[in-house]
Length: 538
Ligand code: GLN
Image (cartoon, rainbow, N blue to C red; front, side, top):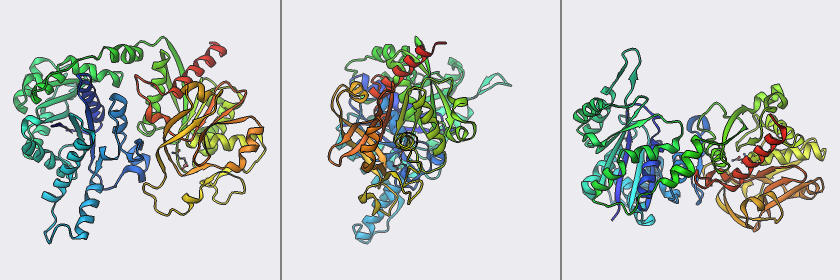
């Protein structure tokens, strides 16, 4: 029988609940338990796939093609859990299911209500994950902050779940903020007391508190929190600000969080090994030998979360090379205004990430041209790869009007265009090429060298494809199509002959990178950028 952990957040959002959840999963996994995770998102969208990055940040894609919350990215980066569609549950999904059932008449004349019908559906989803994954411990993060109206049904379901499964099989962890007030030189526990109070009003007594703080909490503060929140003092865990998110599992473990959780469940650690994580991840992040600077040229640069997995994968590439990766975030529209030279002359690699729509495209194309002409390592991802194809067609084949039909619908030179099957689709949600597809690599290419094998699987999220009509002409001028989706003969990877490292991929390798297992293309890209910097000299 599985054990269940519910993780809620209090006081304010952005306390790092996703990373805390991933870190707890990590320490339990390292104690020898099979874990799975669920993110509950209280919004009405069925999935975040239709949301603007300004609303939501990155859309994370699972192997089975679900468009999910970016917290699933943290979960997969920290643990070995393989997550899919069932691991992200939104209010939109819950209501769609319940309403479809109501229309079918499955409720046999009953009035359909939030309690019990919505809460039952939430609980059924939890049980479905337990059944399907056979995980021993399931961690569930409830999105939003305690006190929000929209997350109430999830919290009510969490409360009922503990009652029905038995309190010994369910555990409640609350992440809260313990602010330091500079003017008074004091740490304040009142917001935590209030937020735990709100949780108790709806019937949930937290077992453990994770206290996010910028100053260490002394025993006096911990005992006050313990007393007022009715949580044993050893279960008041300090979550001090750290320089790398990958330190957090260690910080939790050092305070005995794994032991407290396992004791609650009556479980014994089978082994306990975070040394590898300490040595191969955290120490490499904190004390790197080398340094390189990579420009990420995108359109949502001012948002922290829009390219989350890309930024993390770059850091992983750094870890693999004992190298600190400094990321220079560049708005592609500034490159349109200022030119690439000024913005890119100091960097040792350029990455153009995925995206949608025409805004900023010309700046990305200029950046790619600059990287190509200056032997600067270039990594294009999804839209970035499409832009690389357009740039090459425009500047090396003199097809001046080369474009994507995404930007100019009836362009005369559709180097990037829709497949027939995509053209027929009218609905927006979940209709892109999504999830894992196989790709066959060509021997003797950078891609083959990176992966070290011919057959790979990568995750996709796009509508448009490279137009095979242009393949021959581009090959003649030195482009190499090093990865192909064999079944449909679609271009998945392009490279350039004679350039030290120029790789564009139609898929999203960043979703499969982990701190202790960097994605091979990111590792090679960082290595190439270090070589570039060494050649250029100080
Ligand atoms: N907009 C492009 C497409 O739909 C690229 C998508 C992406 O970069 N994720 O094909």
